[in-house]
Image (cartoon, rainbow, N blue to C red; front, top):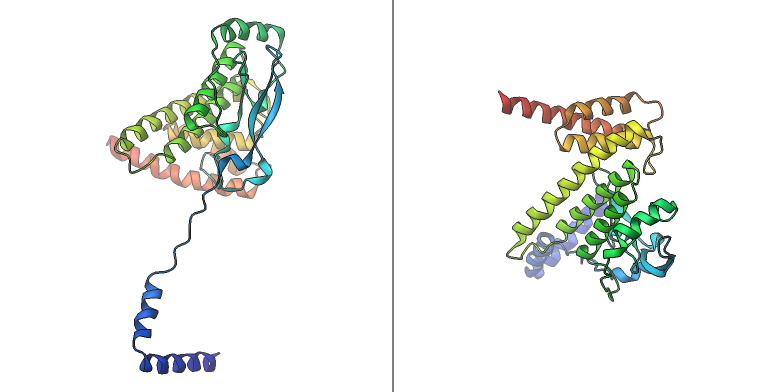
Length: 287
């Protein structure tokens, strides 16, 4: 290996002596590495129109749906929000009937009791006016309106506390992505970013309150989550809103749990370390 390297150096030294410009060129190349081009995806390429029959008005319609096999998750935020490379699939998780206004997350779509259908017809459908959308995909504003309709329907039909909490959680996640997608060079960027962040926190706080209530009244799995995952999510949200006693208790439960995976225990240890720092900072600020 040493011989190969020394020979390589000798040859390059000879080339540099014959053409000193080589040395400058090599240094320039070394100082300025080739930039990787950011891939721009066409969001519509990852969607298709799925057919539905509305359980309220029995009308037929289509809703834009993500081709799950074609998108790739690149990471997850601390509160378990998945981040994908090609698009934000949360925009497409609400099914909204354009005829009567019935809306629900795909997880909860359909299966309505007659009393729920009646309540939706009287309180949602009577005043509903469909907004036309001829685009190939939904904007963040359109997606946010769909989530608001989803939450309104769930309140009217007296859905489970966990369902309302989950809608609030996903709306908060949607707003986070909406804020991240803003044009940083726009003149009103700071104002818009602040407004969106405030809305995000409001929805996440509502989600936290609902998740805690559902934990005390509903059986697992809740929102498709087992007890360990559910506890972890609440612990993270509680820490965000300085409910440190809740976080401490749930993280301790995870760390001693025999059913918790090593991966989520590692995440719990990270939260515990962060919690210790936050508690110290809060005490320091009060003294």
